[in-house]
Length: 596
Image 1 (cartoon, rainbow, N blue to C red):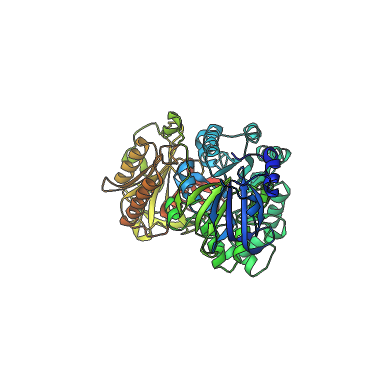
Image 2 (image 1 turned 90 degrees about the horizontal axis):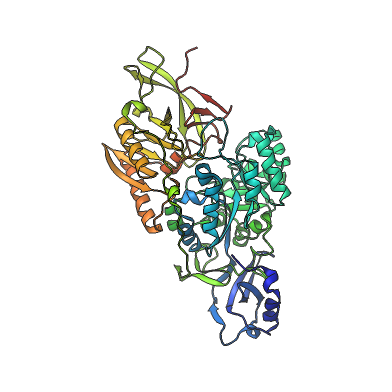
């Protein structure tokens, strides 16, 4: 990655004094100084050995015959953006293809939590994604996944990570902390594995990132006291204010499927709290969002639209992040000695960079990628991760009633548009020939979760509401967090086609109607990521969106919402390969409700 400051500090000092000439100079722009919250006009930046050597209104003493001059007059010079919490796998892209899209939008550093691939391939998967990131111009830091599987008794993942794995992972270069600690009940109840992971991270003097969607004041404070220092699951102003007052670093999220900035940013715009412990993050975005709206620059823009001063919004995506991960000696601002991770902006409110550099190398110019991105090849077995053990038949997706009636009462998973949360509902549905039926009029569909890691052929059955599908079926091997094979639909025959084809292709997402494939996004890398270019993935995802609409679903980002329906750490109810999970009580429940 970048050269360490101690390796080149004397050369930087000589450039600052004019004894040595800069390699690059950015001339006469307005500096976004995130250290002092100022906009400083007519500033120039001298860069040498990938770092800033001098900042001022006159840098002529640093310019030599071989110095590259970049004119910034009329533009703003800002630090590159830093995403404090995100999952590359959710973009459906390899780390390399994601990096191209993100850097084009001004992101120069990410702090990724690869717990999706960890649930499929364990520490090996984490290592592969981390290694891919280390060869890129994008600075890729890793928080080592903490909860693999997310819960020990509600689902079956493809791998497990224990305290020894975390301790080892924390020794890798540019692993900066512990990934989001989703098992907050385990932390609060003193679970030995969770407490051990936190302890090892603290001993390594690294950061413990959190995940606290709901709970009492006592639970929250116990969680913080245990060593967890941040949270990205805040969805209300009141929660944000409470966490900020307790010293927690509040990560305000704006992803593809959930939009929290509008509400949570009120702690800044209305409550006027100090912003030092507030960061802007993406968490999960899909490819079209990256191209059409942006990456972290979109989140910064949303904060500005809600009334945050532009410099303050940029601070929440640069220096605040660097300080949180103890990287501010290298990153997060434009000052002597810091890495030259810089973007040029024509407009401070739209946050659309025209030029992006990392370590003094121009990667994006005139909004086009000009830097090099080396190829990275995953081993063959990583592309052979869907092991279901058998072909599925229609009867596999039929749930028998325990009652001898024409109808029965069931537990239903209700999804909420633009939210990671679900609601637990009860509904009466028909029973025909002893089989519990879906009810399109009530928007109630069949859903199945299939073990795709162990070749067992095992699955669970349930019902869901909120997707508005009228016909056909959908399937996905992206099913947070254990990433088993999800299948949902109105038509059992189409569910069979969708499940079998997706398994044969190595994973991804698919839509089927009348046994015809309407769309198929192939994701052979662990069943989570495509090995194709950004342009190909966007085309396939566009077809996927249209196919969801064709079978009736008009909700926003339906496949993102679908991928979360198996996530047994966010209330209230989910489906896993083991059954229906009541997240309020952290227990498995029956789909069919027994009569009183």
